[in-house]
Amino acid sequence: MSAALDARLGRAWKKPPLIKRNWLRWSLIIGALIYFIAALASMEVNWSRVYEGLDRGWQFIIAFTSPDFGSRAADIREGLIESAIMTIAATVVGIAISIPIALGAARNIAPLPIYLICRTIVALSRALNEIIVAILLVAIFGFGPLAGFLTLSFASIGFLAKLLAEDIEDLDRSQAEAVKATGASWLQWINYGVQPQVMPRLVGLSMYRLDINFRESAVLGLVGAGGIGATLNTAFDRYEFDTAAAIILVIIVVVMVLEYLSGLIRKRMQ
Amino acid sequence: MLRLEKLSKTYATGDRALSEVTLDIPDGEVVALIGPSGAGKSTLIRCINRLVEPTSGRAILDETDITALRSGGLRQMRRRMGMIFQEYALVERLTVMENVLSGRLGYVGFWRSYFRKFPQSNVDEAYTLLDRVGLIEMADKRADELSGGQRQRVGIARALIQNPALLLVDEPTASLDPKTSRQIMRLIRELCDERGLAAIINIHDVKLAQMFVQRVIGLTKGVVQFDGPPDSLTEDVLTRIYGEEDWKETIAKEKAA
Image 1 (cartoon, rainbow over the protein chains, first blue to last red):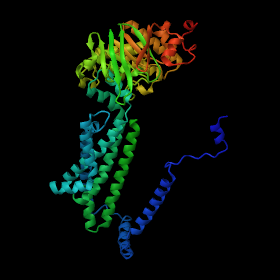
Image 2 (image 1 turned 180 degrees about the vertical axis):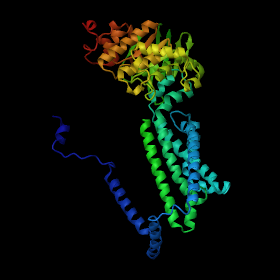
Image 3 (image 1 turned 135 degrees about the horizontal axis):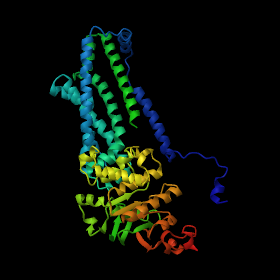
Image 4 (image 1 turned 90 degrees about the vertical axis):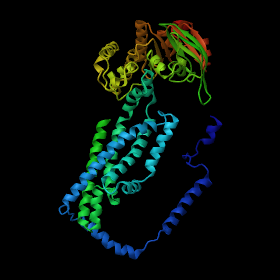
């Protein structure tokens, strides 16, 4: 029996802590607690204003029990069609542009200068929130779905390119290497060695983005970028809470259907 | 004929994987490359088709200096070197037929390969090879539906459809059971004999290597320690290559006696 074993026998075993230094671990825990309490205390709540607002909020919620699909049916239909066109067009354009950028943003495929350029494009697209881009584009192109379409395309590029690039970086190197060893050209290598490996991910991401774009189109309308959001905005402006409730219900149903469809397609793709 | 002249590779991390390896491998000779893990066996065969760029030295196949080729010439040269991989390295989501035909990528244009419109002669050759390795019924199955031994047969067909002059084989039996391992080694040896192919086979199983090759090269820390016929492998030689151990059971019986 070795001395190392002797010293250990009969002693309890505990998993080593993530942060080894005791003082550091405890100061981090206590610091986080103090910060949390201080943050809570710093929030100012005007309780009398909340009391007044409760009534308006209640009216809005009550409206959901009697949503009015009828009196603005034409507006709702028009807004939905506009949103659908914006969503589909922006997703298709987003996919088409994001694929080459994703290839460029994958370190295992692209040389450093191209990698940096593509990563910059991705970072730019992701750093600018949809609403901010939409406000800018509405200022340039005026009210309407064109600004919405461009905003969603721009946002889709960053989203799809980043996540697809990460999948490309995770690919099984030996499969790609084997294709390269046959004397394949670069494009053939991508088509045979890389594409089959990332295809399910690309389809899944695209479906997911389609559903995000539809939801975003509802928000973008609030800043004048057209679509179902514009219809919703008008309903709010007129205090037609029952129509607004109807629109929100329609949006929820469409998003749920898209969610279901994308799940179905992703399952089939494996 | 393949000739390596002082072929060396130092990785960016500073590891010297190969130092001045000089070898001649005549046409049609099947060579086993043995040595401990990390000895540079994989690096050596990858430096020949330049999946790994050698740091210095030359690799010459039939008078052409592979190490001096630029991208277009290198792609043409790679067509003449079929590679068979450890863990098969089939593209798993493609069909067996697509995997075999991918061996022709160096010969056909991009759009032809993109639309999978390979010349009829390639398709016929692919079927012939699949029949030869006993998998013709599997042609339209996806590669990940096959067993290990079957996948390696597809890998062999993919390498052969390139119509190579040389086979580079990286641990073909590393994840196969003993019986399948022998079948795969036998198949590789038979196909090399049928087609007059030279082959370099990285392999850990010394006994298996002795059964199927004409020559054994032992590599230790990137240096050739042994080069000779399989029956001249002795316990002393294995100790030189791998280090001290009891080697009696590792070498083919009649030689050890």
